[in-house]
Image (cartoon, rainbow, N blue to C red; front, top):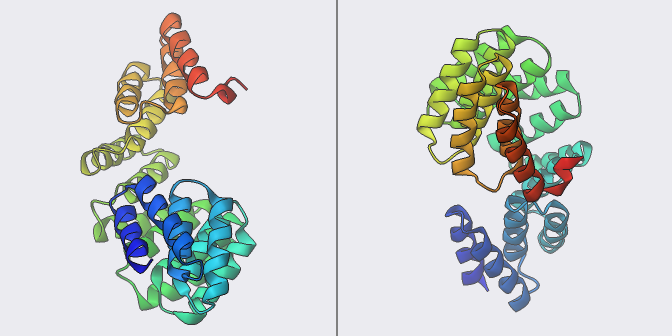
Length: 274
């Protein structure tokens, strides 16, 4: 069962989520008292978007090994994705009691506080952590996001600049800075960041989609269609991408193309019709 649990972890790192879940489930069947196996199963279920099932697995893991910081952190993540931010903070705090200096758990706690609109506390947590870990890119990124939520774009961009300097190939940080530039009216800087994000993370559809949305907002519908088309090539089953491209076709007066994209969006995800 330990070998299965370890193999599940390796497959998860390699993004073989189906294989990782199968191995983790088998490990829990072979030995239902294996806390590592239950934690690995919870981790994979989070990656698959099955957050409520993940919580059940992680509660089993924690019941078997109460001093298991990774399981506590994963449980916090599951609560976070379920918009249960107060429960998320409690779980991250429990993890930090065991490993007080883990920057990623601090990031998750700060993000949960931010999403719960506890902005001052989120900033306090991040400022304290950054005094200890000033070169941590993700802490600086979270600081940027919290300042942005607090409508302080100047401080947000300073934090994002530090984060990008520390981790220049992190596409999510680049996209976060792009969004802040766009909100601040610096459209060329935003477009440049999205382009860099697409270059450093060529399998990720999100920079193309986000740049397409920005171009569409600027009335650049033809260029937006090109970006949405690239995003669809990278993630062809995503109904939102077809919906977005449909809007840009509509903005050009290409109504049949727009109808085709809206129809595809509805076919892939009927709830889009709502």
